[in-house]
Length: 247
Ligand SMILES: Nc1ncnc2c1ncn2[C@@H]1O[C@H](COP(=O)(O)OP(=O)(O)OP(=O)(O)O)[C@@H](O)[C@H]1O
Ligand SMILES: [Mg+2]
Image (cartoon, rainbow, N blue to C red; front, side, top):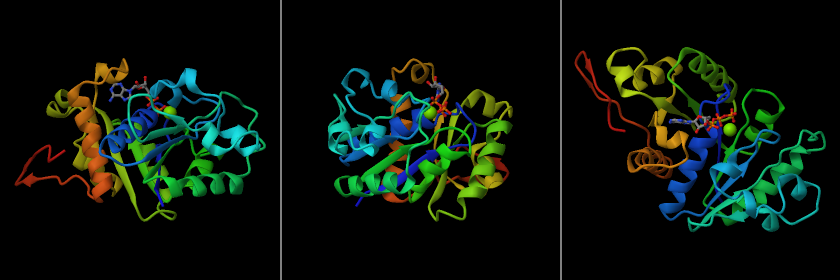
């Protein structure tokens, strides 16, 4: 039975889809069977992130409406073995989604995977609840700016009642900003939000262009390893001199 992990944030555009896709790819490369389920119905972008646009025949709504079997909707990643994607759809006519049916679909699918990663839409409305209710663990993605941290705090306080396994990924970190003390250290964000950090992803032009470099991939591999091993980042505190810790 797969571990079902939702990637959420509250604030839009902080990197949920990027991190969910990157971690999914890394977990698959580590040898796990991974299903990435796109729950951002209406404004989805996982199809672009996973380069499966031309392979989608059915989507999650077709499954729920009984037009196809889940296995017919799932797309196999072209380059990465054991990575599969359950696509979403660009429609706003989503009133008919039944949460129990959705939960059942994911529950049944999870028997065939080690991990089901769920890409959550922004906000804390219906789409958020839909994504959260099928998961049993959550990763909250934030960037190191005050607006995102405040929204992450709000989401963490909602999720605290639901999940025991709740952690953070801090995205778009610029080391030069940290050194100039223009943004908080990851360990300070962790402390402020009272949540463990699974990993840090640095700001990268290559991520923006969808063309990952080794150093970007390393960030995702470390997060994937921490998820697989049930570990979090250990921050070192050498007296008054805070360090970056072991990411
Ligand atoms: N570490 C990074 N460095 C540079 N660009 C990044 C990084 N992370 C994400 N981005 C870029 O930021 C944009 C938003 O990322 P993404 O779509 O993953 O956010 P999101 O939280 O899923 O957004 P939404 O709330 O709309 O679903 C994308 O163009 C993505 O390429
Ligand atoms: Mg997204």
